[in-house]
Amino acid sequence: MTATEAPPAPGFLRRRRAAAIPAALVSLALLGVNGLAYVMTVVAARLLAPEAFGELAALLGVMFIGVVPATGLQTAAALTLGANPRDRAAVVARLHTATWVGAAAVGVLGLLAVVPLVSLLHLSGASTVLWLIAVLVPHTLVGGYDGLLQGTRRYRRLALVNTTFGLLKSGGGIAGLLIGGTPEAALIGMAVGCAGSAVVGWWFTGRPGFARGLRAHVVSATKASGALLGLVLMVNLDLLLARHHLPADLAGEYAVASIFAKVAFWLPQGVSVVLLPRLANAGGRRRLLPVAAALVALVGAVITAATAVLGARALPLVGGAEYGDALGGAVWVFAILGTLFALAQLLLYSGIAASDRVAAVAVWCAVALEAIGVEVLAYRDGLTVLTVAGTAVAATVLLVGTGLIRVWRAHAGPPVAAGRPAAA
Image 1 (tube, rainbow, N blue to C red):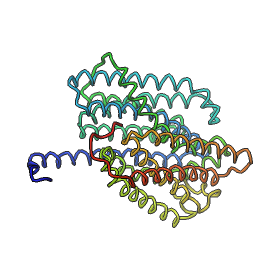
Image 2 (tube, rainbow, N blue to C red; image 1 turned 90 degrees about the horizontal axis):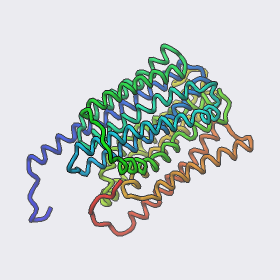
Image 3 (cartoon, rainbow, N blue to C red; image 1 turned 180 degrees about the vertical axis):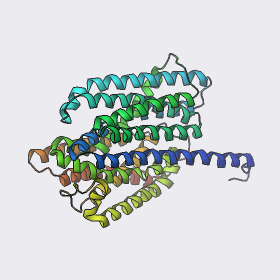
Image 4 (cartoon, rainbow, N blue to C red; image 1 turned 45 degrees about the vertical axis):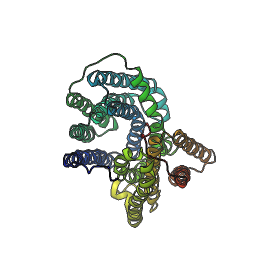
């Protein structure tokens, strides 16, 4: 602070302290949503046979890819409203319309993908894919409503909508598993829960209407989805390839082992969420990115060490006694994979904040390398649970390594004067 600058007013400090409370609520809500998804996965692993669990896990992997438009719509809405447009009510109506257009597009694309997915995942019929589409359409609406609440800084309502979404979606999936005991029953329960969450989201955003002039918002959401799609595909590609190439029992074991990767990926997500706005400033990236990467790596190291200590008991602890024959005590490899995913996410967020297109290109290159590596191993009859996981680890190591080198080179240069934050 220079001699001419006045000290912050007490009211300003009170507002900052007040804003920290809803921000913490949103972070806890996101952790709760991921935790409930984990609980549903564990319940599914316990209740379903390995072949059925492998089918459900593969469909959930497709779902993670299918929700990318929801994330893109949320990002576009938050950025648009964060710019404080003059006629906010009209902008909200256009963004709401764009959300519904995005949800309809997800439904149409899902219907076009039914036949390819049935063949790729070796499904017995199309019904499970149709119910997956019924999950994705309202899920996309919820993403748009989250963006409206985030952009208008109604964080308490955002936390409530996220909490309700986690409870209804994962709770519906668990109820479906308990009642029907099949992957299709789980998806039916999730579809009902997502539909209810969309109604809750519409209500808490103030029941917005519709308006024309949404082209710019659709374009913004599409651009925001490009890099995020590459990351989501990277995180789930190994599971999909395992389902396609490995026998059903080994694919089921791979699905249970991937739970450890997802836990290592989920736990440090709060670091990226909290730091993303500050990473938009070049000075903030210089100061915070190394610390954030070290924190993510530390969390992953703890999870990896705990998994290594459990050894051969890790898989039976999560999935039951019928799992663990193929992997033995090597489950820690999946914890390392999840840690690498978390680091890749942090570096990608930093690239998005800096408007760095190379970050997105690097993610897609890593996806291609992993897919090619698995196909080569399949051609040479060298695929096992460990070799699929090892290929994913190798591709992600290259992605994270090149990202860290680029960050180091950027930090080694002269400091950039703080100015207007880069657009996401």
